[in-house]
Each structure stands twice: as structure tokens, then as C-alpha cells.
Length: 277
Image 1 (cartoon, rainbow, N blue to C red):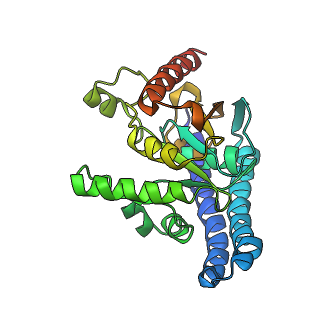
Image 2: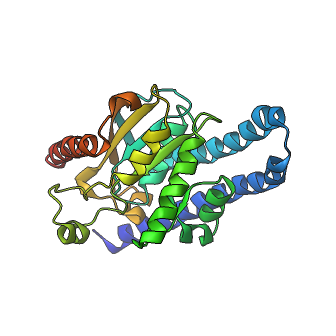
């Protein structure tokens, strides 16, 4: 690759990054304006005005960033399966890159409710992105491994799960708990070539409080040629992203640990097949 082309690609990544954060900043301003009104104890005001307005800001930010990535950068997103329009699905997904988050938001929020995901507490200090997560009350976790922190993390997930059904919103869990890397996989002795071992705690807690008819959407994301690196995605270095969507019912998942193991085996086989194309 010539030096000029490398410079142009890096320049596009910079431009995409500026676009992403400028767009998010605009809609964050709107969220901050309406946040004080969320404290007004009038259920009809919250249900009919404040919540739809906040979710509208969220969807606008997602759609504009998605249009940039698809129309300007040229990323093609291909779906296998469909998204249930249920207002409160649980979404389970593999995790390879920070780019997974806008991808999942585009797939779910453009066709259904906004997506809330479990975040590390430290993320709220990250400008713009962390502030949006804080304003939208995303569940915040320690993820330190200490027993006391694990208990607090499960309590945070439990609180989020108990709110399912009170307002439209999907709960997203990256069951691996961390982004995939060859080093982490080796350290875990993971039996899955493209995945880390899944952790059952978060999903199990969500299922405990979910209604029996709650859809559990299992998403598997495959980046072309395995190129999931965020900066590379910003300049179209990963031109094709394939996503497989499989749907289950919460009532049918009686053993979350066994279900996750089976799903990870299926994900691994599909990802392996995609890597050969």
C-alpha cells in the first residue's frame, strides 16, 4: 500500500472519529436538557413525553452515525435473521471490538427499542460516550473480580432486569465479559478459536426477572477477514460485517449455563465458516 493511500485512510479514520463524537455531543446536549424533567413524579409526563424524547435523541444519534459508516465509509452490514420488535428483548452477543457497540445499536435500535448495555464504572468518565451512558442510566459494574464487587455487579444487573417492561429498552450482555484477543483466549485456554469463554452470571440474573415471553436475541458478529480493530473500521478497512440473529424465548432457557455453552459452540462453528470465505 502506498504512503499516500495510507495517509488518506488514516485521515478518513480521523474524520469519522470527529463525525462520531460531534454527532453524539449534539444529542448528548439534548439529553442533558431533558434530564432534570426525569425527576418530575408525573408518570404520564414520563411515559408520553420524556422517555420517547430521550429515546428519539438516542435513535437519531445511532442512525446518523450508521449512515456515515455505510454511505461515506462504505461498510456493508449483512443480516442473517430478523429482529423481533418486542419492546424489551435481552440481547446476547460476542465481543471483539468497540465497534461492536454501534453495530448492535444499528441492528437493534433502528428496528426496535434502544439498547442498554453493562458498562465498567470507569467508562462514565470517558467524555461524551460515558456521559451518555450515565444520563441514560446504563448499569455500571466494577468487574474487578473481588467478591464484594461481584455482589454489587449482580445487584446492578438485577436492578436493570427488574426494570424490564417498565419502559421500552433492550438489555445487552457481552457474555465473554471482555473483548476477544488471541492473548486472552490463550490465557483462558478457550476451546473456541474466535471466542472467549462465556460467563453466565449476567444472563442468568436477567432471565430470573424476565417475563416468560421475553425474546432472547443471540447475535454473532463476524468482521471480514477477522479485522475488528476499531480504528481500522473507521476508514472502511473492514468493508463487510456479517451478523447472524437467532431468537429464543426466556421461558425455554431453563439452564442458562448449558444454553450459553451450546450457543457458543454454534457461534464458534459459524465464525469459523465465515473466516474461510
